[in-house]
Amino acid sequence: MAPGNNGGSAPNYEPNSAEGTPKENPAYAEPPSHLGDVTVDRYSHREGNDDYTQAGNLYRLLTPEQQERLAKNIVGSLSQARQDIQMRQLCHFFRADVSYGRRVAEGLGISIDPSMLGATAQPVGNW
Image 1 (spheres, helix red, strand yellow):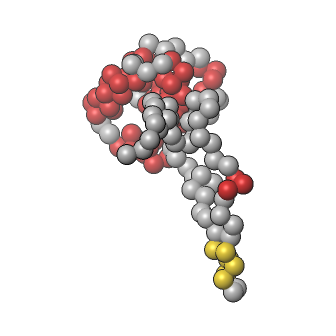
Image 2 (spheres, one colour):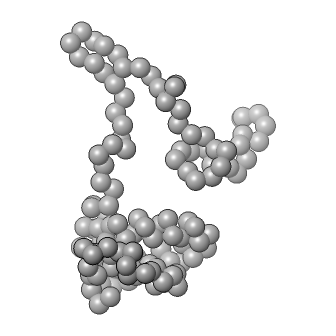
């Protein structure tokens, strides 16, 4: 058992948006290991990753009824979150699929300015 309050209810993960919480410090990174003609180093899972294509493809595989149920389930939980968290999550949904983002935004009662979607964003479905 950890002594003290062990950070209480504050986030103990990174990245997060809370002030005064742990942040990665590159000064403590393990240096690369040189093994003869090979150098072994830590892999950065954040570089070059596309976190949205797979989510968007999965959403588009769903039937319209399944998409609606998914959006309603997300809205049910996300409606309990602070608005800044809702807006951050909406950005993720829009990046995966415009229809997905719009469906969730509508369920939350949040109006999205169409000019924010960019010229190439095209609505999917009856939006």
